[in-house]
Image (cartoon, rainbow, N blue to C red; front, side, top):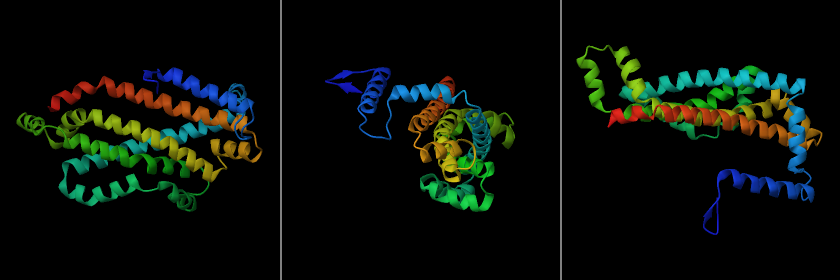
Amino acid sequence: MSIYGFRIPPVFSLLIWIAIWEVAGQLELAFILPPFSAVLAQLVILVQRADFQAAALLTFQSFAIGMAIAILLGVVIGFLMGTNKIANSVLGMWVNIFASAPLSSLVPVLMLLFGLGQTTIVVTVVLFSTWIIALDTYAGVRHISPSLSEMGRCFGASRWQLISKVLFWAALPEILAGIRMGLIRAVKGIVIGQLLVSVVALGRLFRTFSDNFQFEEFWALTIILFIFALVFSSAIGWLEHKVEYYASTRA
């Protein structure tokens, strides 16, 4: 963010927006926008509530299971597309369709197939995350220098050894970038899934707060989800930065 040509650090720009939020809330410009100080106070109270802790644990379990499945599927699909022309022809179109499609519209179908429970949330996370991971993995594999594969074959590496010990590590920067993007999409998916199901975990709390016009609690819960996404995304970004040196081996 810049003002009159002066660049303002992100922390200060965030403080400016918080100040605007506080002023708008104090002036009661919109009934759905309480003062930020009131939201912050409710956030402290909310994290100590037993119902929030139980809902957060269930949400985290769904998120972790869904992301584990999405990472496995995404990496496998990406490697198949990147190393096999037939697989690329068969899977490439569908991966691109699902990566760009409005997947929120499929959540009601998932509810019919898997019911109103944790399974639907897990499948929603997988559906939102897998395709971007697959595309980034595919891009990473395709950008690997052919000399690396040739070197592995010269040393007698089997196909599995070539993939697991050469190609995987060479494509790791792009794989981690895909996981980071997939994680962000997964948070979006888990929120949408729980809001539509609205009978389990944080979705039930969101529904309760909105139905009872408890907007301090509603925005506190929203901020917690934003922090959750930011922390995990930053952690993956840090790990991605640590393995960037692998990219240089593909030059």
